[in-house]
Image (tube, rainbow, N blue to C red; front, side, top):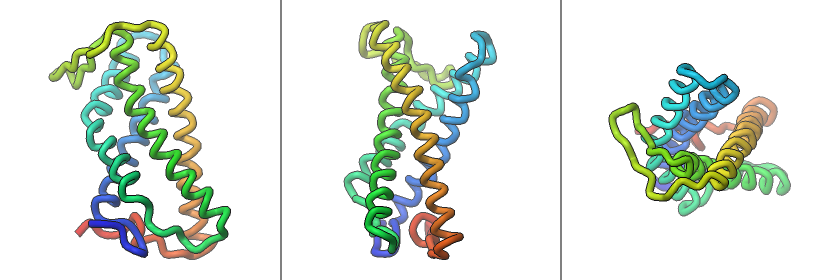
Length: 179
């Protein structure tokens, strides 16, 4: 369950892949509807984005706190500067996830709306409408999304470099079995 010298424990691996799927899916949907004109189609994608985010919220925040509390598995053998960059990218990814999953609900609530989950559950706003703060949160959410795309791309590229060019076995780190 806990991290080992060669990789991450079962909970970390499960959290990683679930969060990766949710975050990448949320980024894809968010980018897809972002520039759409107002209307039914944009509203459909926005509601899907909000519903999935709300359902995944507790698990994703657990993932962030679990990783920060447990730390990281030992770095792959590489130059010290690359180890520092790797650690920084991982911390920034976790920070970005936390910012996205905090700014998302706050953006809705400061806009004076409840969080609607697939039209079945409604989480009313615990705060009053705050137009200026709402606008700021929308910007934070959008900018963080774009930064996350860059960080995820860098993370995937580094994994490919380790696998292809350095022929390092990464299977046990995040691809181990969940038995």
